Amino acid sequence: MLKFTPIDESHAPLLRKYYSQCTCRLCEYSLGVKLMWRDHWHPEFAESHGCLVVLNHSAHHGAMFDFPIPLPGEGNVDAALDEIDAWCVEKGAAPSFGVVPEAERERLMKRYPYTTVDNDRLWQDYFYRAEDLSTFAGRRYSGQRNHINKFRRLYPDAVYRELTAADRDGVEDFWQEFHRVFNKENVGAKLEVCYARRLMEQAGAEWARTGCVELGGKIIAIALAEICGDTLVCHIEKALPQYEGVYPFLVQSFAAAHSGGLTWINREDDAGDRGLRTSKLQYLPAFLGAKVRILARNELSSWETVPALKTERLVLDGLREEDRPHYNRLCLDDERNRWWGYDYRDDLEGEWTEDYFLAVAREDFRNRQAVNFAIRLKGKFIGEAVLYRFDYRGGAELGCRILPEYAGHGYGAEAFRRAAEWSLYTLGLYCLKSRCFHENTASRKMLETCMRQVGEDGTFLYFEKKV
Image (cartoon, rainbow, N blue to C red; front, side, top):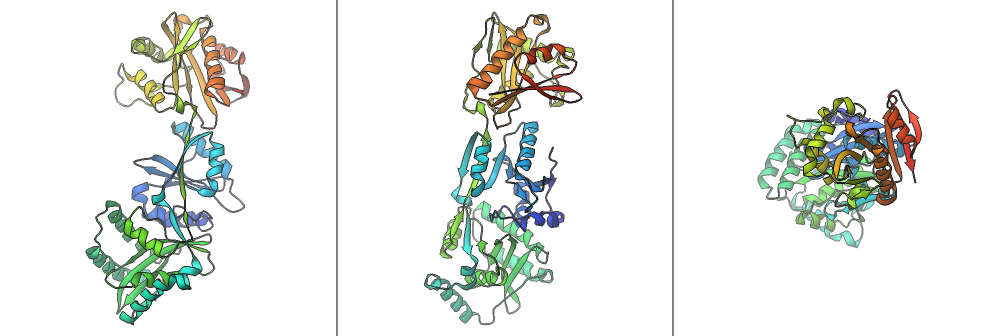
């Protein structure tokens, strides 16, 4: 299974191996964004089948993956996605992709039969032709040229130059003054400045492209970017606003210095900030880069309640309050449940309570992670059938267990077949899976009556049924 490592500066060479050749162009597919926003997104990475797999953690959206980044000619994206799916199944999480390049949206929607899609305008990146920002040529850029000409008249001694690690004190002085004149009250904007200040410490790093505008030995504007594929991704563009025209001077000078041979410049999103949006639009973007958020859903997503299923002798329906003592007895029967292949103590936090098992079952259905059917004989609880481990690609696993005093009468097989029929032909699964221990002869015989054995390992026999 994928094993993730939190991202920090020490991983720059490894991550740049992927990002330097990445064709996604979106700012999230860059080292700078991962470092700059690491305290917000808490990104982690793993390598899989020649691909970089990044997992981000959002307080609002939970765990969200980036689309896998393959090494050209080496990476197997589908295999990396399979690893993501396997990780999600083990964690009981839905595959969620926070920033999907628009070109890959259809691929994921074909992969996952049920999805929700969000394309938030606030986070779309602004893309400019590198040649346009390097030259400001043509009538449409006359306003920017006028601002630059005025800046040069007002500050004839101002120069653009590269930044290095030796400029640390000058950059620190810049930040001190920038904070004094920074007047935005937006919490996100203030946070962005703090994160940018930390990222600017990477000036001099091999991957970072940096520059500044200097006037009389004083730094009045700074910029930092990195090259990803055919795109210069600009992470930081800050200037002291009292120097009229310094921003367009910085934008053009920085683009001319670092975008040679590149096609695009990505100046990132505006996060809904009105002033920032106005400014970015004034530079006439060629297009806005959509960032699609995709959350995979499973077949349970449209079911509000646990249905009632009938067989010749049994009824399968939702667990009830009055089932609690019988359900607890079933779940606490260690001797019988060793065939279940799961020990509740592995997930128990704190002391066990009488409400624990019923609450877990209800929470799993509320999150659409599983559906627990109570198996009833003449209205009395005698066991359960559980549909769980949804893979969000049309597959899930089915298990069944019966109280010991009702064993040996075929009730388990009868309930299992009915739950399997509902799963495949009403719920709409493509593939139903199950497994049993080698030694569990009764379960093996039951599964063989309605499923096909597809494999085994040292512990389990594996069965499935497809439609």
